[in-house]
Each structure stands twice: as C-alpha cells, then as structure tokens.
Length: 491
Image 1 (tube, rainbow, N blue to C red):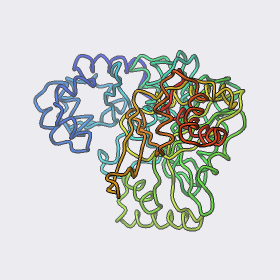
Image 2: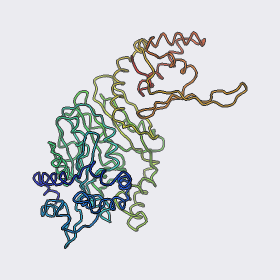
Image 3: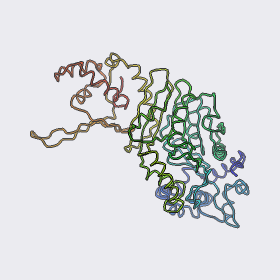
Image 4: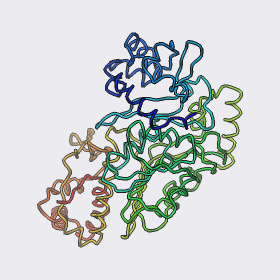
C-alpha cells in the first residue's frame, strides 16, 4: 500500500511528527545517549524504557524504532487517523497497533529528515520479502560519507531505494533525478521526498534506461552489488547478473551519462580470482576518457560473505533453508574459483586530459568521511596532470602538509639505538602511511615551499654523494604518490 502515501498524507504526517518532536534531536533528548546508542546496536530495551509515558514522542519511538505493539488509543493521539491504517503505515488488529512501515528520523550536520522504508527482519520476525526496500543501512551511510559535496546543477541518484542518497544530494544539487527498477522503492522514496518537502524527479526503469540520452554533473549509485549466481532473491541487493557483472555494468556505462568534468561515485564489489590482480580486473571495466579511483575497503572470503548476506535477509544459516541456500551459493563460488570478494568505493570523472586510473587498498580503520578526500584526490590529479613533465614537477615548490607526522622506530644496535622503520603518517582523512628511507626523510625536511623540488634534489645529491639524475628518477614517482595522498602540497 506504499502507493497510497500521497503528498497530502505526508504533509499531515510531517505536522504530526513536528508536533511530537519526532526528529533526530528530539529522539536523542528523549532517550539519552546511552539508550540511543543501545538502540543503534540493535538493543531496544533501554530505549523502550526511556520512551514509556512520554506522550506522542514516546509513542512514535516505541511504534517505529523499538517495534512495539501499542494500544490504538495511544497511537491515535500521535498519528493521522484513520489514514495511517488505510495507507499501511500501521496495522491495526483489534485494539492493538503495530508499525507497517519503517519511518525514522535521520540527520546530517545541517538538520533532520524522515526516511520511509520497509520493516527489517528483526521487526518482521521473519525473512524479508523479495521486494523489500532497505532503509538507512551501513552501505548507504558509507556511500553518503564517501560522496563529494560540491555544488552540482544536475545530479542522478541511480537506484535510489528509500531515497537516502537523494536527501544528502539536496544539500548541494539544484536538480535531482532518482531512478529505481522497483515500483515499491520509488513509492517509498517519493514519500521520503514529500515528507521532507523536496522536489525530486522520480523515474522508474532498469539501470540507465530511464535517463537515456541525458547527462549529469554528478551521479551517485548504491547498486545491487551482491556477488553470486544470476538470480534475484531480493531486489535491493541482487541484480540478476552473475558474479560482479552488476558493478562492471555501472562502472562501464556511467561515464556516458556525465557532463565534461562530471563525477560519478558508487559502491562496488569485485571478484578475487587465481592469477588475476583485482586492480587489473576493475580497471578493465572502464571506458576511455575518465579518471578513476578504486578504493578497496574490505575483502571477504566466500564462507563469511555468504553467511553475512543470509543473515542480512533474516535467514538463519542453521535452518534447512539457510543450509540449502548457503550450499548452492558456495557451490557457485567453488565452480568459479572465487578466492574472495572485494568491496569498496569508486570515483569516476569524465576528462579530456590524459586519464589517470588508481587502485588502492584502504582496509585500515579511519574516522574521517571519504568524500572530502575524493574531492581532494581529483584536485590533486588535476595538478599532477598539469605538472606531468619532469621539468614542470621539478620546478614546483612543495611543502609537507600540516597533518603529517614522522614516526621512527629504533632498535638496539652496536652503537646504541638504530632506526628500524621510518614512517610518514597522515593524521587526518584516510590516514595514509608511507615508509621512507634516510634520503626521503632528508628531502621532505627541505620541503617547506621555499625552493623548487629540483633545487632540493641537487642539494640532497651533493650532500649524500649520489648522482642527481639517479636521485631524480627515484624521487619523482614517490613525489607523485605523496602529492596524490595529500602528504605533499603545492605552494
């Protein structure tokens, strides 16, 4: 009944939520930090206790966030009635009412929204249906944090689901188009947009078909990237394409829909196969004329991968059904000689210059969002392209970024402490690290923006008695990498 969530009903629901204070800040104030954190961990009882006898706000928290069944008279005071039953927002059974949809506050640092989605398996107490529409999940949060937030005239949210990426896009894009193959997803996304008073164009269709012939300044996509046989058990995660073909499809087709200089960002998965480096695999998906940055955040072995996604759908891997599905899935991995599944972020920019394609492992933990880093990466690639000749790079003045520290680890030696490891560490962003030797340490000590790089290398060569030409050949690739990682900055 998601199609019944009309703009008029969403306006009434917004009024009810605002009267109750059912927004991100209001829920946090009611629950307190401890109970709020417990709720985020999937432990509802502290939140349930904090929300009791707390008026309409407590009712909405218990109805939508802790999944309680409540007396009808209590719910009537918090929601438009009887429209909430007619639309399927709630289900009424006698005098008891329970949530029919997941509607919860969601916020960024500029304010709070509401997101419509389907109830997850915990609230349903069973496996989710095939047309399940995912709410605010880990993947959507990760993509939101990894997305560049620069002004864009036209933005495409490909496979919008419940509309989370489009909400974030509303902060920096003038015109947003949201597509999805699922009619139910578009209905719930439209409700999300309506209750938040956002003007978003919604178009139904498969992959890029709904926007054929159009171009966008930015494209964001959280595709159904789950790797496995060519079947669709759940539309939110399964594409019907085998292996990592869904990720390959989006990566390969996306540049055609970008304006010159336009940027596309997506989550993706890729297979790790015997005798093939993952970087070669993903690079082969790209057409010409693009800069691309592939960031691998994790690699899952088949056993872990299958178990994780079964549980995600609410299937007990110990059940007969779970065992049968796991067996068929693992058979597919074995038949295709899959060693593991890589997962990460892809940033693509349409360019008229010499393309730059970089694939990197970034599997360590870090706290800062990746979006600003992706924007900075593109800027640094532009600078490096403009200084691609050795003469241009050697004439540049560079300085070590303020966030860089040098760590040195020493061990006992014949003459006291002797350095074992020298490591540059970036203390912000993704926390890049580089091990360096004594020559690089000395070079970076001179990178204060006062002398051109070529002059510093001349001085270093003379001081250490090494040929300047050999030092230049060794230094330029490292300088390129340090600039890309934001450790050396042009002055």
